[in-house]
Image (tube, rainbow, N blue to C red; front, side):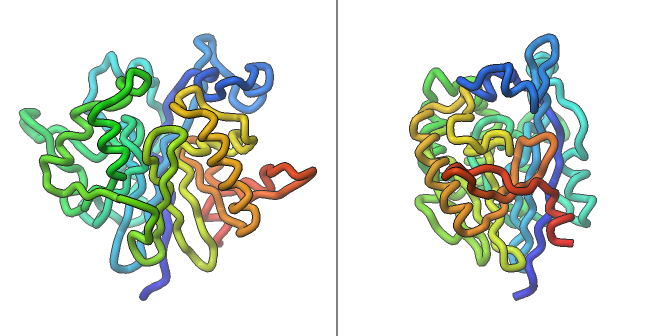
Length: 284
């Protein structure tokens, strides 16, 4: 098997309420790291990860897409980034090359870029026409019957076309999905969130999705108000961070505007950030 390749895809940035992103953490603390504008909005990244093991070309998450209305996007203030196609193109890939699209969960900012309007805008088609789309069965069933807390994040036009395409498959449990690509399920942020663990050059890169959205969220109580089970999130984070420190994982952040990755250290029995860096600089 050829040596694996990994590439960060910076799709875009978008703005979300700072209080929602930091939950119970006071603004006087979090605004040191993410200064809010006059509407209390902070800028966050939408970042995917491309994994190529020579057989599978796997993309993790795909951003918001562009199907929704101007009003919808007016609340998100999309800015920056390379776009989904442009980000892939930087490394010589096209959407048609992707064999597998792994979705951590079905909130619109993680899965919207996988479905687009057809050329006549009479229906929808898959952005990755040759890819199998993967999501956990728990998350799919959760999203099909959404609770009031998450309902606005689950958009039918992002999900139903995947099922109609016949290219949707379900992850049932923690498993090695492909050689060098394992997934585990977490339930604090939302039911059945998939967290990928990718092997590359002797290291394990963990795509953090919304378990730990940025390096600022490393402290166990720094969690989002979007989490449906915040106490479960804290338990999952604490267990994961202990493991990540012991095994020297690289944490890859989907939403950290400033830093792609970090490693961890421990001081006074607390896990903290050791170093922040880009994937390219680490593996140079």
